[in-house]
Image 1 (cartoon, rainbow, N blue to C red):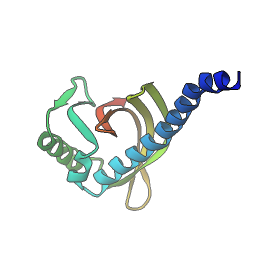
Image 2 (cartoon, rainbow, N blue to C red; image 1 turned 120 degrees about the vertical axis):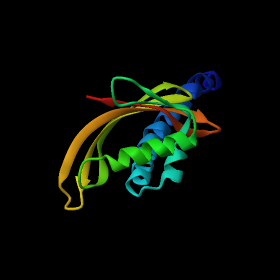
Image 3 (cartoon, rainbow, N blue to C red; image 1 turned 90 degrees about the vertical axis):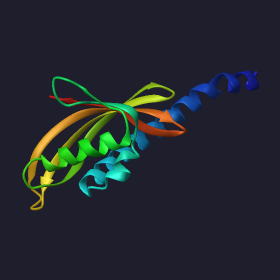
Length: 144
């Protein structure tokens, strides 16, 4: 009877462990992505994505098909960021597991200038999927 009880609850235990891992990994991935943007490390930033990737900041989503297109887009974004932008901080977040290999993080963040003054507050939904055993972003949607 104990063996049957134990076997019945293994999937639940593993599922809870996977959920805990995702709730830890995705915020870390978001911070790494944000730091890459802050330091203008576009090569590292591109490593956080799979292609094609959908970026949805405006009325029309942008489909980015490869690393070169992504880097070009992020260089444009960085050049047109709020005046004085220095860095972003993750304020709070909610991780939603969609399946074993897909999840998203609804990130609430603030942008700051070099005087540590908040110059922008926003949020976005960053969608991830497992690709070759790693969590990679496949879509980003700004939330108004």
